[in-house]
Amino acid sequence: MLIPVILSGGVGSRLWPLSREHYPKQLLALVGEQTLLQDTMLRLEGLPEQSPPLAICNEYHRFLVAEQLRSIGVQQPTIMLEPMGRNTAPAAAIAAFTALVNDPEAILLILPADHLVAQPDAFRQAVLLGIPLAKNNQLVTFGIVPERAETGYGYIKASQPLSDNTAFSVEKFVEKPTQEVAQTYVDSGQYYWNSGMFLFKASTFLVELEKYAPEMYLVCQQACQNTQQDQDFIRLDADIFQTCPSDSIDYAVMEHTQSAVVIPLQAGWSDVGAWSALWEVSAQDENGNVILGDVLVDNVNNCYLRAEHRLLTAIGIENHVIVETADAVLVAHKDHVQNVKQIVNQLKQSARSEADLHRKVSRPWGSYESIDMEQRYQVKHIIVNPGASLSLQMHYHRSEHWVIVKGTAQITRGDETFVLTENQSTYIPLGIKHRLANPGKLPLEIIEIQSGSYLGEDDIVRFDDDYGRHT
Image 1 (cartoon, helix red, strand yellow):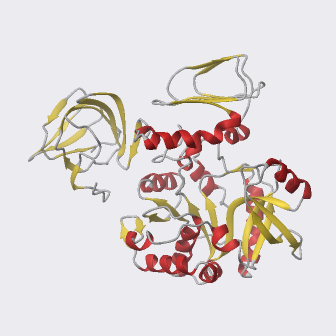
Image 2: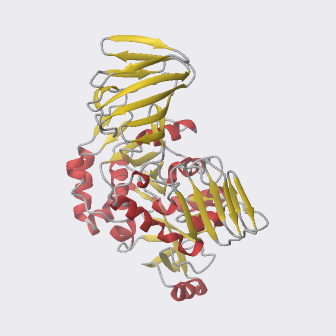
């Protein structure tokens, strides 16, 4: 069986402020109505003998990944949680060990969750070409036919063509080149962009991994032997997995194996690795501008302008990226957008929340958005999904006032449980156990006013939680 393996552990920091550590680019609808994660799954429709997908993500994204897969009709996905990131080779090994439990002939299609493929039919055709090669114990990668001399990608040099000339043995993988070297690669016709997508039998990959990265092989094997089921998720053993070397599939296996094969792919592929790449793949107006949201311009050319929450205006500029969110604004020349990651690093060094969180934060039960915050008080807009419930909890440093603005709230406060509806309110004193639930069929919306000496999200003591959270 063909098992799609969706790698969803990336952060996408070069697309800040839209992409953030706790809500990265694969979970965003950057082009079209579906998120990149959803697009990755939907482009697989029509491939034969396909098993439910195996998604690998981190702890924080687990409910978001599960909900996005559920909303597009993906049935019974396996969602494995990495305790910490260890790059793509350990993720592929975890997937391989898991797949072999039920199918010794399992073929894995390894796909990053944050890529864009504009021509899914061409992508599926390439996968179909690769399946017989994978069954023949070859490790297949998909090389993107280069459209230009690109310095932001690694390259694959093809060698001897196989019998049907649709695939080639791999001579070598090369690092991101200079502009001059990249141009020689493109001119030669022998080099392809390294897409980071792979197709191989689980057993074949593990044989090669054990040969070339034996320590990684053993750690991943042990981590898979010590998993725990947590509701709909499978948790790897954190103490074991943290000892795993961090490496990519390319470095750990593909650069060493004698079984590497590349299939050229022309499918409108992009890794959407920077704002300039997103500008290239988005619909542009007659002036070369991508304009999204409430934006007014005059004498503006070849720009990416995105307003998420308020009016954005621009005059007399070209080749710029301006992205507005509720709590941050990015202004950058397109030639320098690769350096956005440096801004994110500065935010992290300063322990600023804008590196990790949006003002609106998703939770498995719904979402909350900070409306206002000053010393000793904070105001939030909270939305609770129908039938959902927050944890039974208490706070050491703050009290809360709740005002119901839409829907019906079932409230637990100490030993009492009661129901409130629109325009009613209640007070939760500091140190009192409490819970908010939505027993209705419509979303519940409340305004929460917090007051106290400390208002951080870590001032939560949970006593019971429907989603298995402890902190």
